[in-house]
Length: 216
Image (cartoon, rainbow, N blue to C red; front, side, top):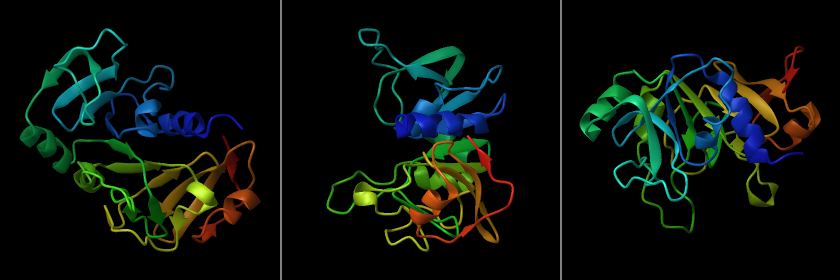
């Protein structure tokens, strides 16, 4: 199997539609911006106050005035605008972000998300994730299917402190695409080198298995 992170980023990018305002979290979500479908142009918003943010800056081409919410140097696209965090979070909380992609430590059957506390490690907090998952129209979690030691990350119920309660719409891993519905987690797609059996064996949560599962 290819690099799991690349597989996840490539599949997650297929959710983007032309004209979407999108917020991309650090890591795999950022990578998804490199795999846009043909003729799809998105507007990337960074919660520190950028609209129409471009790709990461090439080494030696960094502009210290352009950085994303994670502090990494980025580029900007023609027509970009800059504003304060108050307006930025006004956009997020006002429902003007079409899709947000973010990572996760745990996701559960109800679509609840734990993403900001790593046991035994010092972390700065949830950042803008709590606002993004509450304000975005569609929340897509991009994560490896299991943690270190093959511990499941898709659980019956999250055991870590929640970033959001019942806000996740889709889960994309290197093995599967799972939709969060009122009835539960529905396995919609399986990666071409995996199988339904493998996905089920590595998922603690109960999965609804439809007859028409696609591959990606």
